[in-house]
Length: 208
Image 1 (spheres, rainbow, N blue to C red):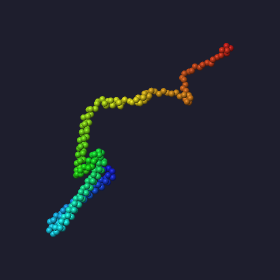
Image 2: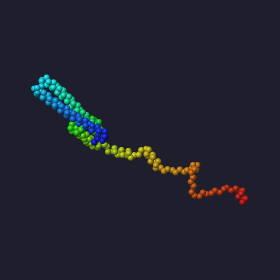
Image 3: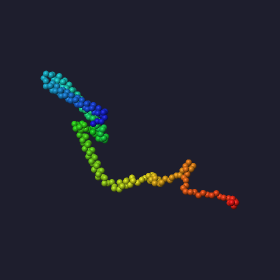
Image 4: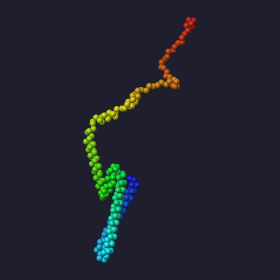
């Protein structure tokens, strides 16, 4: 189903124009049949003069030509409305540009919006996908066995900057002692410190 209200509105208007084109084609076909019947009656009539019958035949021929032109124009309108419907649906699908162009210009038929071309393309894409899968399975054994291990070792091996950061992380940080000039407290030494006696004078010692 179309998601946006704008696309839904365009689809409804295209559907209405498509129906009107079919109705106009049917009316032109009926006019052509009636004109042909008039020509047949004039040819079989014995009352109408040959000159008048000839003029009526010319007018009827012109009317048939106009009916054919109207039918062709209405057929083109229906084809364009169908392409509008296809465009609205294709812009929501994830298809490539070549596939989109093929589906957009596919012959119009009664087998759905895209006709038999859609089913043919689906079968072709399915066959291509299966063939690609078979090729992938047959080629997988060509890959060397050591290559994944080598890639795994390269992924596990740390780089040079990482090694440096690991070494710095392993070394313990040295505790820096704050200096007295910076306003820090000097740590006290544990234990008793021996006191030094002041030097005595010799003279005083002798006097004593």
